[in-house]
Image (tube, rainbow, N blue to C red; front, top):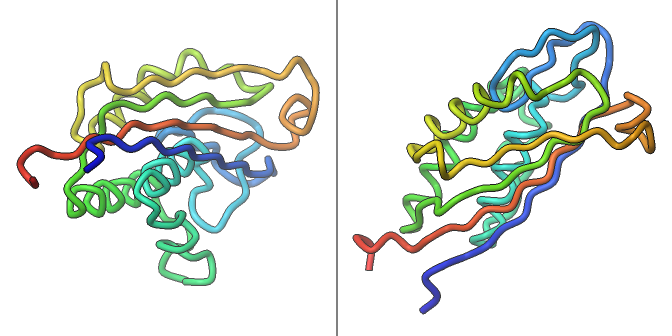
Length: 164
């Protein structure tokens, strides 16, 4: 029996006027926000997809479809708490996660400590298990031209020794 699983998640949302910019559960002051059915939190969505993918449980669209009105404007941190419960029910726990946010603007470095705190708190893990980085794409592509923001995440899940 395998005692570890690795998952990768990716998400992207278009930047638009009239929406809040929420990344990693943190509201970030900016002239544009992310467009989506929920709060469009690209980082948290990538984390959830990586966790679900590690166990071949589908993606967030399967668990929280954008056709379901109950998820309109949903707080992605609350959805992450639900994914954590799914993972735990399967007998797994987070080993660590490593995520990268791709955004030309705004500068995200000042907000990363709070993102790490929110995600680690939601997942019930140590701060040292949550790595979040941000990068620009040197004005290249849709993120570089400030049309959208993307995020990648890799997670390591570990079989909970209590479930064996």
